[in-house]
Image (cartoon, rainbow, N blue to C red; front, top):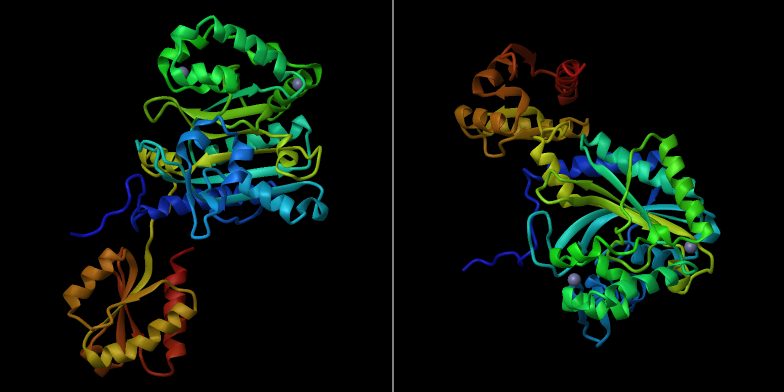
Length: 428
Ligand SMILES: [Zn+2]
Ligand SMILES: [Zn+2]
């Protein structure tokens, strides 16, 4: 029996990969326009990193992490999200000393042991950004607008929901109000929520049970409990979004699945995949660097976009704007002598920058024309015994079917130059 991939793990096959590359290229281009540079961090980290950042009493840490002991008996985890690793690296390498405000992005796989469903895999991919060293609300709006722009340039329509989660100064009073509310509905909420109403009450608001959610409609809202500093930050964030003409709605019950968020949180939401789901989400995490052993008062904010959902959305819209893979030239050499002649010519053309394909075995013309069609070749160069005798090969435009003779005499560089000119001329 052949071996299959693990449940929730998926291959990205050659005919699917174009759309992934298109999304990544679009995002990278926009990240660079906004002054971000890439950082690449390891997939494996000490388990403690995620327990300390994401929070012990979260779904991710309690139920979903790929954690195990390595051969030395150390507890390690395959990263369930990107922020903790990027911040660990930021602190470890003292990046704030190099540049007071760091704008970083990373793209790669994340791992969570969830029930696999459409658009949700156990190995999934995120593009994420982090900005460290600035707490101005204009940055919150700039970052949200960047996420908005990525979706816009991909041709996707989403709605933006924002909220403020307050800060260590104002959240305790809100928690008290929430705990009091939950105590009154104890018998109407699930066991997880009952337990968390004591250990981590905010977390109950993102319980996945619809029964619980019905109860929480009447819950106190955190934006009614913000301190002056948080209220000002939130209203300035909204005003800055208005300046950038990015439309939003305030969702006072959005708490996100991670403990480290402070003040602004946001989600870019779509209903095109059935149930409402976020294609991008993030928020501010002003205390997190200190919590991970870095500098005090080191503000930070970031967001992540889920690649699988973007791929689903783009496929639904017929991959608008996604470039098709083509081949510039197929060199059809027939028979051994012609193939030996064509082999170094193809290498030379590739060195000159053309996408060239050839049949290494010199098969029949019929078979090679089929290969040229499959490769979506724009031109074919036909080189058989007859052409060798005449000293001229046939260059065929595969779209217009027009043919021209190209001389074979002289050094291969001369033929190469003619072919490069013919292929690039039609590109203008
Ligand atoms: Zn506050
Ligand atoms: Zn619940």
